[in-house]
Image (cartoon, rainbow, N blue to C red):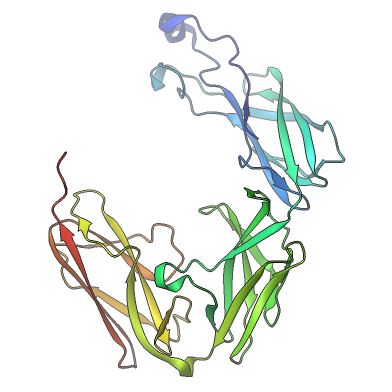
Length: 335
């Protein structure tokens, strides 16, 4: 789904660039998602010039940038496969896949220098026949059923596939939610994962249920809805067990907070009902890194700086639930 137009005539040499300026320092590019679009879903197609100086050996201060200033027309060769559903806005157009196939999209536009161009890209579309849901619970937390707190609203990542091919697109949610309520108005796009995040409202009382799909008869995502009264502990779970190599600039290790129900850790819990306070007791070895690294699960990230034992403790206010985590940090191997 990615195609690039050839460079227009570039300036002849650095001397010419320095005196006259190169009006086309980088290639024009069309950026899709890199995946076929799911039939019934929508996806943005962006068209623009790459950053000044990219893919050239020219110093940045000798480049004069370019952009798409006015979109004259967008033509879909086979409108039975792809339809434009929203007009050009700033740098993209929104399209919807209407049938499985392949078609060419042609852009006629005026650039920042007033010159008119035509650019085209080939788009593939495929029908969805497999789906997947991800509760983003790591390690011990990942097996189904996914334990979710009663009465809450929870977002799960939705994968749309054609066979083994992961598809792009939003606005298509072929799910049958069982005892849960599907909140389509909250569905959005998770740019970090490149997937739709679909929200559900959980029943107010404990129950077992399953989410099914109208396009994938074999799919069943098991859900265990639990009530606060069954929470009986707190755990700290690292993304990996270690040991970890000490590093000056990297070595980030996410640590998930998890409550336990019947002694089993679950990653989805109401953080307002169960507010976790965590403390890094050995900041000289593993100081807390003030970023979530794009993770949505409640927790913290530490940075392994020096060899020793990294110690993290946690507690839940108003309860006697506490947890301790000890992680070994070792000298890095020298090549």
